[in-house]
Amino acid sequence: MTPFYEHRHVVTFADTNVVGNVYFTHYVEWQGRCRERFLAEQAPEVVRALAGELVLVTADCSCEFFAELYALDEVSIRMSLAGIEDNRVSMDFGYYRLGAGPARLVARGRQTIACMRRDPGGGLLPAEIPEQLRRALDRYAPVSAV
Image (cartoon, rainbow, N blue to C red; front, side, top):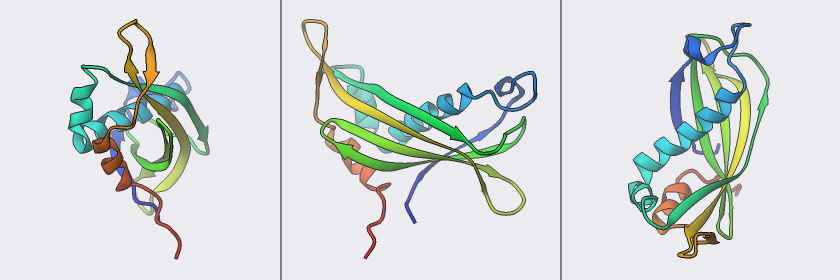
C-alpha cells in the first residue's frame, strides 16, 4: 500500500452546481489545497523559499471522475508521490467519500510541478528540487515490492 498525505474537506453548497453535485473544477482546486497544506506542514522552508527565487510551476494537471459528491459529503484527498524526474515532481491524488462503511474512491487525479527559479532577467530557469521537499515527498513514495 502506498503511503499518502491526507487533506479532508467537507463539501459546501458553494462547491456544487445547479444540479447539486460538485462542479468539476473544485476537484482541481482541492488538489492545490492538498499540495499547499502538505507544503505548509511537511516542508515549511520551501514555503518560505517561495517568497524568494523559488517558483513551483504546475506543468500538468488531470482528474477523472467515477462517482458524484454532494453538499455535506466528507471527502479525503490523498496525495502520494508518483515520481521525480529532473526538476519535476508528479503526484497522484485519490478522492474518497467518507461515511458509513469503507471509504469509496470517487475520483483520481495527477499533477506535475516543475521547480524553477526566478532569473534576474525576468524569466524562469529550471532549479533543483529543494532537499526539504525531497525528504518530505520520500515519506509518500510508493512502497517497493519485495
